[in-house]
Image 1: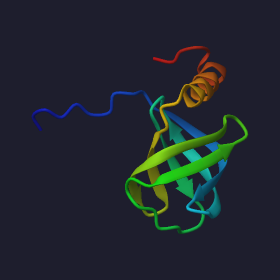
Image 2: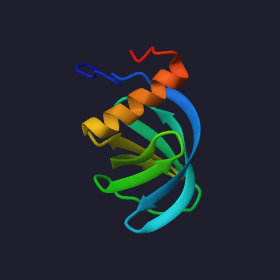
Image 3: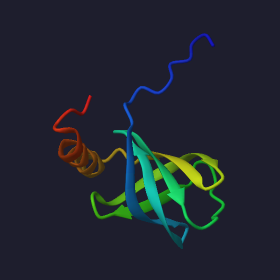
Length: 104
């Protein structure tokens, strides 16, 4: 497809347990993969999420993060992470601990 750039950010497969909150509905889940810009979340409970909505999740490894829903397929949700420096620092810290400093 002409003009298609594709995914620019490297993703790391993860299995971080998470507590996910969508519009006040909380469910256990997991972060299945993570990049500097986004994440794929697994929701244990079937919660219908809408494109463009805000979703938050909390992990032991990174703490509280916020993002915007970009896609949803069954129990998996793709999110674009909030672009704050705090979010960036949390993700970078996770990568440094788990990639030996390689964050490209």
